[in-house]
Picture 1 (cartoon, rainbow, N blue to C red):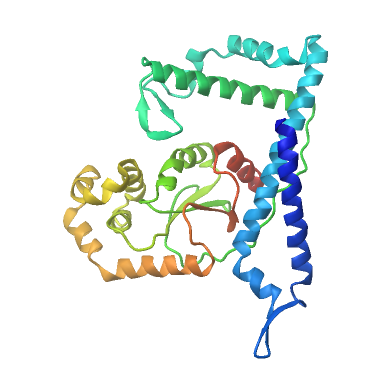
Picture 2: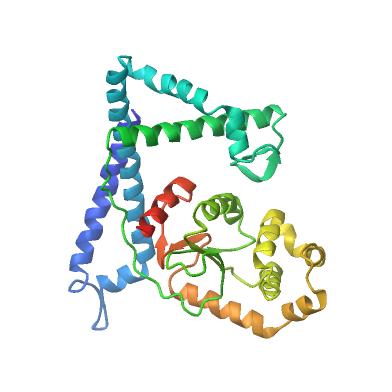
Amino acid sequence: MQTTSLLKILGMFCIVLVAICSCEKQAEKRIVAVVEGEAISLEEVDKLIKNSLYEYLFAIYDVRRIALNELINSRMISKEAKALHVRVDSVTSLRISEMKQKLTKDQYVSDNALQHGVVDEENPFKLIPLHTEEGQRILEKSYVKFLNQMLNKELSAKYRVKISLEPPETPKLDLRGTVTYARRNMQSLNVVTIVSDFDCPVCQSKVPVFKQLFMKYGDRVRFEYVHLSPSISKSILFSACAAKQGKFWEAHDLLFRMGQNGSQEIESLMTSLNLDPKACKACMESDKVADEINASMEQLRALGIKVTPTIIINNRIYYGEISEEVMGQFIEKSLK
């Protein structure tokens, strides 16, 4: 049933893809409107909506990727069932039970430093103690998910799975001149740029994903943060001024943890980060700092970047799912 639904959706997206490709081939020569003798080409139209076109292409890719993974998993499980001489519907539970013997839940807690609690994906800024019923529920869900990922990797290696499905490649952007804050491998040619806003709820909810990616790839990738907001908030100014005292990322973590209350607690944040309050206040009142950030945000808008969070991997906008697994695949590809 799920595969059928995915194929129906895929079919609809394929129609869109054919239309897009057809438009691209004819764009330069096709005139779609005339105003007092002045022609408007399809190329001009597509230029205005190019980000939307790439969103459609990535949506097609995502549906294909999900359908492909379902087919791959089905075939791997069938082969494993034959190898183990068991029914297909018994393979996963049997193998997961075996893996639980090799990696116990206690070991999983220790390996991932979860002794102090776990985090619910729907409320990523709340630490839930393991001794609570909710904590145990979230831990079990996370543990089983991890075991399933391990099983998938093991079977993929065993049955020599090779995937040639490629995501669409977006145009390269020139980000020179934008105000960025970088960390980890500063010499790396591989860069993940996060265009974000402290007052954006979606941005806040994705911070744990970015943190996981940072922990996993920080030794090989340079991670950058860039401000984008309808207007400059106190939070943005504070983080920029904290950066001048070498504390941008500490300010970043505190502001996202506090959410929209952060801008109301600037004085206490200065104390928490042990900043020079006089220098910080003078910086926040400086027109130069505000002008630099405004110019940076205008540059992003001129490039067609108008929403947060926007992820840019090696100067190309990433339109896919914001998850550790899927973004990790894109980063891995860039490292090859």
